[in-house]
Length: 161
Image (cartoon, rainbow, N blue to C red; front, side):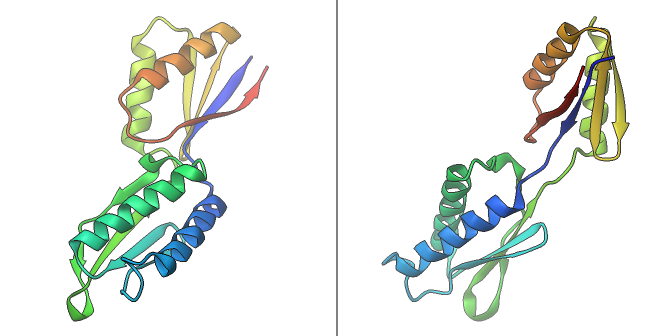
């Protein structure tokens, strides 16, 4: 029986490459040179530091530009509210989403069960396994999932015939 997996994974090596490019640019740009602007990564959390709101916005734009160059979807980022740091600067945490959350998995499952597509959906941890008798049904399921209003980058992997 043909099947495939629906996952949401972010390539952390590409994120690291984007952050390295971003740090090089913050050291060279005349408007950011000599400021406290920077970005650090610890596991799946980024920490952006900036002098003020304007520089924080510039850091956001730089981050999204460099992630787009490395083919990392910006929907995988969850920006937390900015908080005050030392000497009047700002610090903001940005979480990198990994895996499909329970609410989104149940939304996809209910949506697929509400259609006439003959597929079975199984939640396996933070990913979904979708199986069906025909390859065409699986392709219809992919099209249906892509049309759902989900704010999470999804990949369709591990197709087996």
